[in-house]
Length: 231
Length: 380
Image 1 (spheres, each protein chain N blue to C red):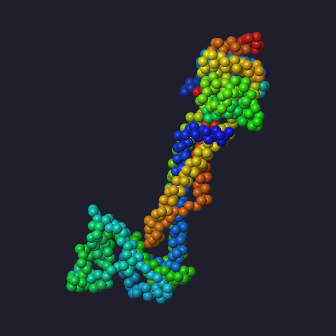
Image 2: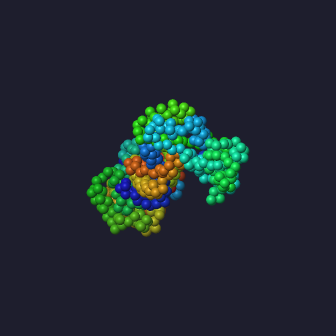
Image 3: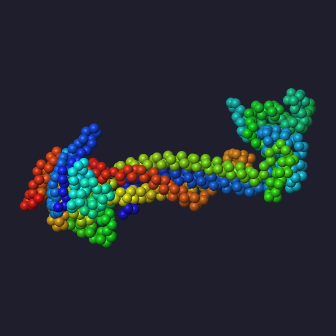
């Protein structure tokens, strides 16, 4: 079991009111899963991904990562886990604007302290796998939305993470490009065995995932295995 | 990678970088020109003092403008003779510095400088002498119109009184006794009247001064060594003034830098959040931003140094009048020239960079301490 959520709650203070973003969620994710978190806007998808990705800490409940309680670990420990075990793909791509596609992808390897030859070899390989070798020297503002998201996927995968979280990765793309991006993620999930968890409210994408968690008002209302997968 | 990112970021956010470059350039200019002027002042002053080391200066114990030079010493008779008895190779010069004054509405009088030797003798009418209660040997002030249409003020020694108008100098001026003239002109006690005595055996200055004190008991006599102490005090005051001026500029610049860096990092909050989310440590992000600040600051400091060099070169052409410095330099002539001390200038460059880093720390720490989720708030 890769990640386990036990009665996880997350509250935000919004002025004088408290927003209950996640209201006691419990589920687990296994290695190699290709899961989608579905739900309308404001249902808590992003908050849930943030909690699983150790970008945020729960108000209560327990999150375990490979059996280790990570609910209240220090920021530096969380950073280290994110660096070595987790990849992120963002809705708005979040590429570093001053770096080229190649340098953006190479960045996690630099953070991991990999040698230059190793970095170059891995970066070239992932560029090839994501089909963007030809745009390696381009900066983000020279790329289309689909190309940017491919770069973001490559960046998330280059350091060989155990799990990749993608927050509405297709939201800023047209439907065809969005589908292509999900297909790339699916392919990499199968090829590399990386666990993918992505959020979306696009019903067409629900079907591709092996598992669908439906979120409503901060609660998981449905957790179904599909396409012949088991939870 | 860090340096590459720093350089590219500074170019991408050009306007903000430019603000920091300007701030650092101004700081560097402030430090270097102030230092250049201060150093130049010290060196010029010390050089002056060394040239004048065989020197004794007479000052009035009770400050008596004009009267000191002309009257007070007169009671000693021929002071040159008395001084020469003590210092055989004495070269004596009396200097009278009159302050610049503005006379009511339309007239201005430029500074009158006259040495004792320059005070001309004059003949005044007997009636005038009676009216002024002045006689032969007294000094009077002649008021007249100068060729520029201004008012001239000239001290003159009454050589004789006469009713022979042919012997009286022609002029449109009026005459006043010195005490009245002083009162009218508002010459206060701060005007220093000096008689300067120079000699070759400068190492005997203290000994000569001691001897002269016994000859002229009510005159303040100072040797060059004693004046050197005054100069050191003046250096301290000058340093304080320069440092205060530089300090004010540095504080102003610090505020601008902090504000600019804060705006800059907040603008890049999302990038920083992204870096943190993919595993960049706080130290990594801090290094990245500070490296950018260092890069920009070095450019600013180098530009500032270039401009300081130009300013100093321009100042070197003209120099400052020694008299403008004030204090013990009131009676000195010649110019002060700024001085470039390369090692100190290098120190200023380093300091300017460190200064920028110090004042960037708060914004940088503010952003790196932010939780990644907060930094990404609008995007994730």
